[in-house]
Length: 148
Image (tube, rainbow, N blue to C red; front, side, top):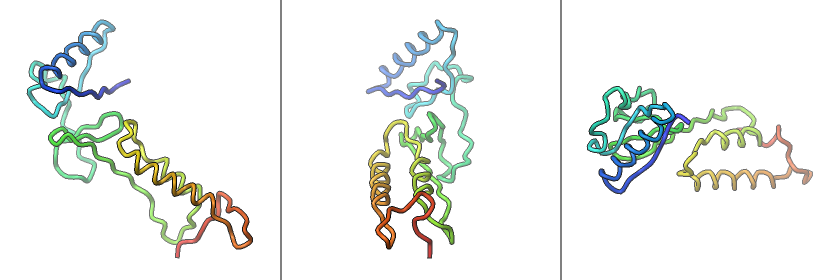
């Protein structure tokens, strides 16, 4: 594991959690680094070398400070997670079950935050499985429809 995400009801609780995590992992000779919080008071006492560096903004959202954690992008100032999912455009390319399933599988959501969106996509995939060709035969993995 290389990242930890947790929360607290107030700054004092956050400091206690931070201290306990730090102490626990130090016994195994591990050092927690890249500390970040949506409340700067929770970071008082953290050595500067252990604070998260500014996020290299290679994501097109805006110029706000963001950090990557557990494969997600988090904006501490607003305490929001950002998701960016890119799919190749289906221009003059055959749309297949395999391509649809591949698009659904690209959604990385370890915390289940966009579960309803993923569920909708999986329901769409179920409907695709029920499609039949003109001879009422189930479509295979490689042929579904042609983009017009």
